Image 1 (tube, helix red, strand yellow):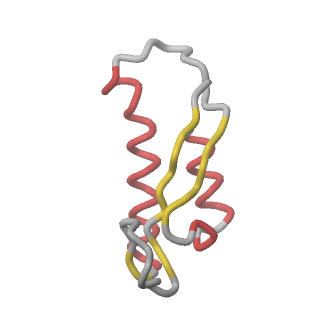
Image 2: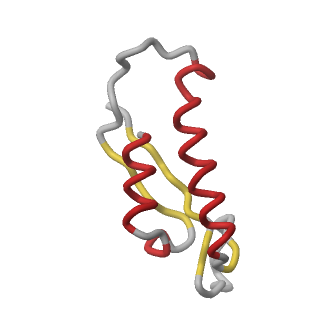
Length: 82
């Protein structure tokens, strides 16, 4: 079984008690971040020496800042990459 943790570091407001890596929401930065996450997922097999056909992730957790700031297209891109 393989579970993936996708950290979404964007928030609409910064809570004083939160210790997660996060920053205020920025639409342009969000798109670059999603693109980088997808690229990182695609490159993971080569970096880790995984053989072709490795089992796909059976769970994906979107956590961190406010994951709901990602739109459906961005979530789809990340899940599809997984």
